[in-house]
Figure: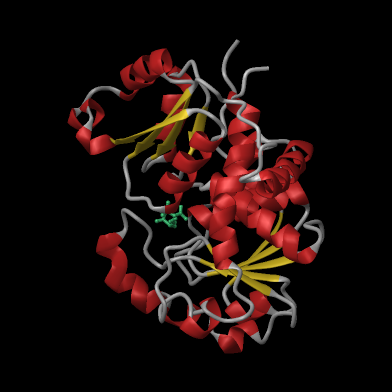
Length: 305
Ligand code: CP
Ligand code: NVA
């Protein structure tokens, strides 16, 4: 039987996603107690990184360990993959040692290729197109604060990047209403937007950040230049100058709105320090939830049945 992968949020049904968030809440409550399960005992999960990471690496390593398995992190440039060994050969070889692979890479085609050649589940730990594991944590924190996901209004401010596209997929699965405000030239890729809309997402792309933030329950943003876009940084500073989430923009949202950011953040660029360090920010709980949500995901995909 071919393994089950998580390459985008659309790999989960709506019911599975809600079940996974429920389980993430349970695992959060059980952490540190004798009742915490170890369903991956004796197993090994590889975390293969072609880009920098703090949260993804640590949350997966800790989560894999707490579920009873051995986490094995590979920095790709220090492996034979980094010296040109084919991705397919890497997938076949890792499938003989490990019970799952978390992969952070550049083009989304690379995680698809690894999954196609793998005999064990592959989890997307971020590509240029999507960052689904981050959305599991984000949805968990939003649900905890708002009591629901269905019908919430989410404002995405800034780049139509991997995080924006992951929110579009989340909209398709949990019935939230998403308004994405991007400068011209930085909209979400049309094919990814179409795919999310075909899956049922209620997504509107606008230019004006205030229009997106008006009446929002959640305001969220991300860096203006993602990993791999460092050379575009100067041009992006100009293009995104009017897209900072500051107190004035937060004032457009509902009084009980929360602010999210996947981190790392650049204070004074995409977000004002007063917002990310202010009372409406839930970014630290969001970051912690990476651990709980990914444990639920690892259990779903990798635990023996
Ligand atoms: N949010 C996130 O994925 O952080 P890292 O790049 O530190 O893993
Ligand atoms: N959009 C960012 C997210 C980092 C977690 C990037 O891809 O670098």
